[in-house]
Length: 285
Image (tube, rainbow, N blue to C red):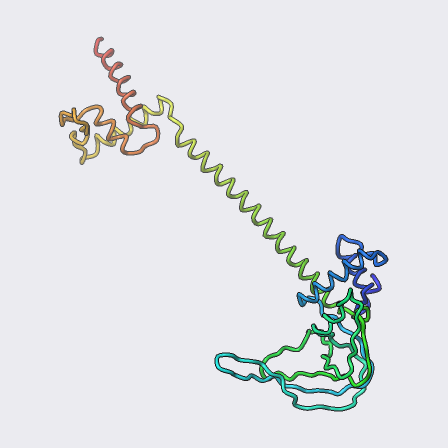
């Protein structure tokens, strides 16, 4: 366990150690390059509302209670914050959000600026973040009543913000990894389906051997002969030289039109030619 693990708020050095442990980069704050890189990283996180720097204040404040109201002007709706109540001269010892404007002032001139917060209205830190500006919401602020200044290096960073950031990053990485595995699985399924289709297509296009083709043809002729709806004129050819009479070519075309595997007009006519030759030889005896 690192020392920063026991702290609710981290110093700049703590953030450097935290990021070193979580990232593949070792921030060495004795190096000006690393220090500049760390500060730039923090600035980007703050501006992207992922990190909300705070400062510690101990002293006198006025308690301000305000309410969010809505004012309508033409087509536009504006939120306004009106003061409801004020309690004077209370002593506090707590953490407060820096606020975007004050943060921008602190990082000017290479983070060498300081700001005096006397009479500045500040918002108490809460683990749920800044108060929401929604209608009828009651907001609580403090107004600093003492001479009090801060510089950039006085800022502290809620460890909870960094934990949320990295937990979300790790969760996103886990989701991305699951999606990647799903994509790979789908790609494998697609490749397998493509292979099966190609294999089936190859099987469909593979011609039967002559013996199997002959058996298939005999089976088709048997069905045609036994079908009471079969008439000889179903086997006419459609070419111009046709005599309008049933022909062997017309029978082959009729069977071809059935789209049966291995029975195309060309090989049907080939089988018929071989059968005619064998029959002719048989008749000689």
